[in-house]
Amino acid sequence: EAQVTQNPRYLITVTGKKLTVTCSQNMNHEYMSWYRQDPGLGLRQIYYSMNVEVTDKGDVPEGYKVSRKEKRNFPLILESPSPNQTSLYFCASSLSAGAIYEQYFGPGTRLTVT
Amino acid sequence: SQQGEEDPQALSIQEGENASMNCSYKTSINNLQWYRQNSGRGLVHLILIRSNEREKHSGRLRVTLDTSKKSSSLLITASRAADTASYFCATDAGYGGATNKLIFGTGTLLAVQP
Image (cartoon, rainbow over all chains, first blue to last red; front, side, top):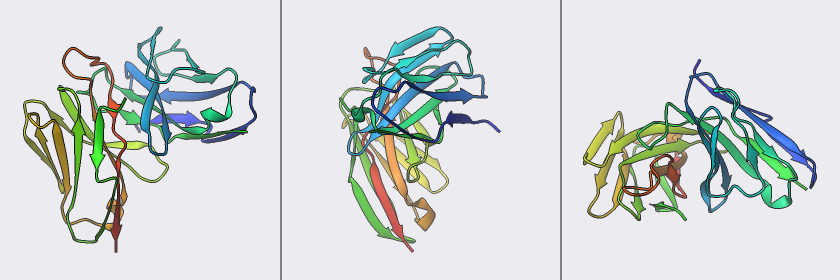
């Protein structure tokens, strides 16, 4: 089954404790992206990757890191989480970059930073 | 900043009625997509309409695009309780802007009462 998986689905952590949210897709997609969703603000892009070893900042990259060492994986790293990073996070992938391509979303990771 | 803004923010209708929502965007675009999100879950692609198209249908969905007004509408006919979800439009940043990502609006929350 074609899908995007994220882990963990729920995470409660404390300020400053490094964490990684994994994302994996099995569709051989070139383009992958991370979004955060907050009430009233919609989805905002954090980082995206056009292909392996090619990543770039989205609209709200501060406090986040990503890497794309393999085509299927695109982990999101919070080196020192803060309470303002409490949010619902989505990973997405598409065949290639551009709004002509449908994006496939993972199930989401609900992160709480205390 | 948001490219697309949906209207209304929330909509409540009875089962069997039609649900209509609009998306307005700021700059010219190449493509516009609509997505559905069930509560707390990942977004699911519904339909894509290109800038040279005026109307598209998919099952009970009808999407229109008016590039002169920079707006799109999504009509769901004969609504069902299972249509209860948030609906988002997403566009690229338009000609001369970044075409390698989707920009999402803040969504319309649709509640279909049985």
